Length: 113
Image 1 (cartoon, rainbow, N blue to C red):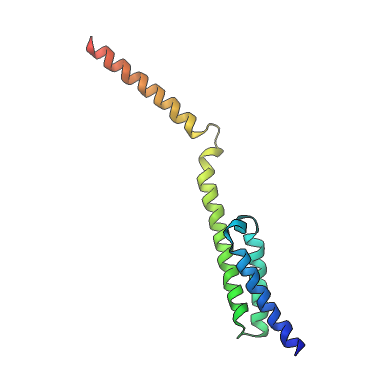
Image 2: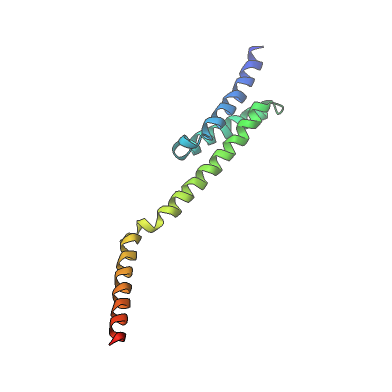
């Protein structure tokens, strides 16, 4: 009986780790390690008892957490890529706007005469 409880406990641990790994607030920092833990414990439990549903859910949630975390890192890097250059985009836009505005005003005033 104790051996059967240990087998079930690993599946429940996998499920809990999968749920924790999918929490968005923690996902960016702990999504991959906790997702990998859920994935591994799910695999171990599935090998011992393929019919264990918590292990299957923990396994799937671990995969989802890993994919979501990698996707979130991609979005963060994509959104911050312009700011990783030498000049910030806002400064470049402001400089171009000043130059274009001064050219525009010069053309208007010079064409009137």
